[in-house]
Amino acid sequence: MSKTISYAYILIGFQLFLTAMAIHLSLLVAPPDLQQGETYRILYVHVPAVWMSILIYLVTAINSSLFLLTKHPLFLRSSGTGTEICAFSTFFTLVTGAFWGRPMWGTFWDWDARLTSVLILFLIYLGALRFQKILLNWLPFQSFSVNWWSTLHQPGSIRRSGTSIHVSMLIPILSNFANSPFFTIFFFVLETRLLILSFLESSLTEEIEARECMHK
Image (cartoon, rainbow, N blue to C red; front, top):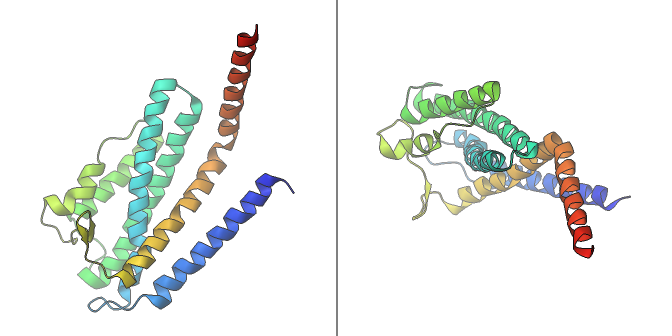
């Protein structure tokens, strides 16, 4: 068995462990919310999906910048893959938010600043996938909309100054967020594996040629 396959099994095992732990903490360990009851547990997947969409957005922006500088197809494909993941994460955010909002707000949808900005961001992702354009800088509007305007959506509960979430509820959110990058990395590598190998081979060839020139 090759080392690569061994590492893959280790990562898969660790992924399954994190998934089981996140489910256990979210459903069995975290107590019911005083006002929302058991309904709030959907936030344990909703909030990490929001965080991942923001994180992948930043990675996609970096890949787009690297492509503009190097014109290497790996960075173009990486930015495209990142956009696909962002679109899925944003769609998942909208769906889980709707199912949480129905019992809390009495409706699946409201033209609230946060909800509307997330919907616009999702449409931007779809447009970027369709036309292969670099993403517009819409993320700050979506991220800070609850702070800039009076909205139906509550303000962020986790800030630089601290958090209003009790630790027994914060740990499941963080465990689900820690679990998310493994799915993202797996999909990313699956989509770009050939270009990654090509990129590594070209870098190795350039290094060998450089060393040969030095010895001449």
